[in-house]
Every structure is written in structure tokens, then in C-alpha cells.
Amino acid sequence: MVKHVGNSNVAGFPVQYVSDKFASYINRYLEGSNKPSDSEINELTNHEGQLYKRLLNVTGSTKHNSESIDDLKKRLKLIEGEINAKNDNPSLLAEAKEILNTFAKYGRITRKEAKRYYIQLQQMMYDNDK
Image (cartoon, rainbow, N blue to C red; front, side):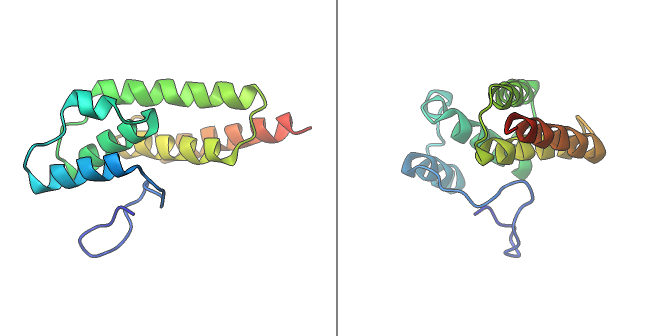
């Protein structure tokens, strides 16, 4: 779990399992010694790599860059394609929600637009079940 100093959850980061490698990279980053290289981050799964970048952005450790936004846009399009292909895995909606919350947090879209897009994805998944 990602928590604030006051022990409250950070919005947009649901409880989820991560690999030992991911956890070690976060610990190394926090210790300030031998921070993970870009090539090491690229060894993570796509989802964990995006999660790592989002964590750094939210904590202010790096500037939010267009590259990570572009990665998230591509991932969201892929999720939409999966749903159109009749994949009804609920984790797709959960990941889409995280991405949309990130876009809203950084002012790329409004909260209202994020909610509307999410509802459309839910409807697409529901329509596929018919």
C-alpha cells in the first residue's frame, strides 16, 4: 500500500501485490543509494514500470513528463481494445480507473471527463456480455 506520512492511503494507488524486484527498487530509491537505472526499470512488467513512474511523479521526485503520459494513453487504448474484444476481466476496469485518475490529477482531463469515460468503458463491457 502507498501511504502518506499520516498513514492515510494515497488516492489512485489501490492495494495490490508487486514483485520483489519492484519492492527492492523502491527501497533502493528511498535509501538514496544506487537508485534503479532506466534499464532496470524496463525489466519490470509494463504495469509495474508505469506504477514506479507514477509513484515518482506523485511524490514529486521527478517532473511529470509527456513520455509517461503517452505510455498511459497507449495503455488506456489497449484496455479499450481488450474490452471491445469482449475481454470482461474486472482488472481492466480497475486499471483504466487508475489511469483516468492520473490524467485528472495532472490536469490532462477533468474529473467529470474521467468519470464519463470510465462509465463508457463499463457500458462497453456490459454490452459485450449480452
